[in-house]
Length: 504
Ligand SMILES: [Zn+2]
Image 1 (cartoon, helix red, strand yellow):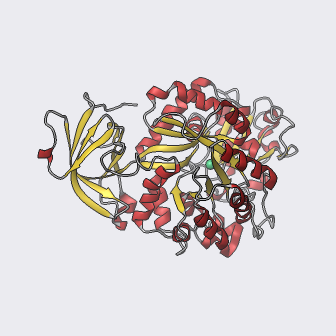
Image 2: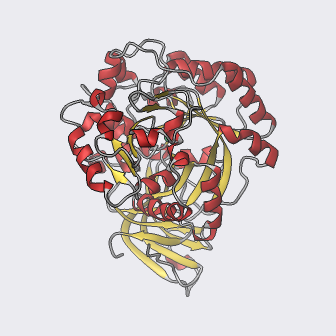
Image 3: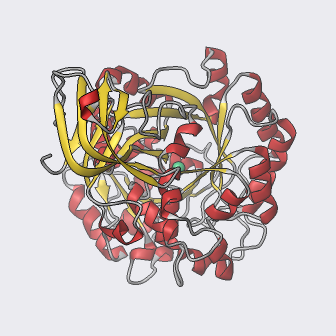
């Protein structure tokens, strides 16, 4: 990736329109950036020192860099090197693509298929036998876009140990943990991982993302530490709960590291996902009549929360269905320090009871949510409607949470990456419980995320003392009519342009 570095450690960004999403204000100004940090913000350039390179932005709008508060970026970078089925419009098309890829590979790992993009839903037809007809000897893995469900052939199944419980061996169907762990079973090489960091970083930067809260694993964390000096965006890392004991033993604490790569805490799964019908609900799914799955006992969750509190580790708790979140809140109410100083966070919260909304606000829990889900699934006849019926309009209730004074932060879960895409979802939400003012939608994707990693004095604002992590856009982002056509012109991280679309 081409980096655009200024020869000195200082740069003046002149003639810009600074956008403030908190006060919903735009001010013309000039910024003096020194050693990656905004040193001065002024209206008159004459006040600034001479002899520093000047970049004239010709009246363009500048916003704080986006913070994507829930990513699997390295996994995305691995996917970018694998077979992508997201554009396939039928099961047949998926199978053809796999067949075409068999020749040159020892193994075919295809991902991102989504039966909701198919002309006919043939998900039920897809099983082991179908993939065995393509190859009996080379492993084939077909992972659904949600990352919670996959179908594999017999050769792949042989490599999946019996310890994994939620596996339908007769039909080659895998659910939940084992699916998230497929990259550990069919491991990418170190070289693939290094390449993944670069590929995914480039993809994120083009979308204006300058920081991510990344769900990782120890091996990827190690690779990232090796690449630490080459990183072009900032990573806050969460590691799976199965390593929790080792994290505690190694003395790692929330915030360990630096402003480019720091360790945050432990990620825990409480339930599954909507698309896989494994999110834990109070009232059943309308199509399967199941109520989903709770993946951890209350006792065990309580132990983890107590341990996290004792050892100063932030928890990132995956909880999608209303039944899962009720359980989590019961545990948190009992065991976290009042005011939630460790800033424990709940991920997704797609369906919530009103009582839980109030609790999340009262307990000051961070609600980490994905506005892109609204766009993808929360429309009449869409996935949420099909599996939940009329309840679906109430999902992803960002506005209700804000009214309850909850700290909502936005992320994408890489489904797909893209803050502008997500912001459109939040602004176009079908219900008053979710629909946001455009400034709030941007704020939740910028300043709000900084709080999640204790960076509220460094990120999310264009003010002296804050990082020069900035995004230049072509039109006024506070005007809703511009939303569909906003273009990111360039992106700066720590005072260096790391992406430029148009010549400035
Ligand atoms: Zn995720």
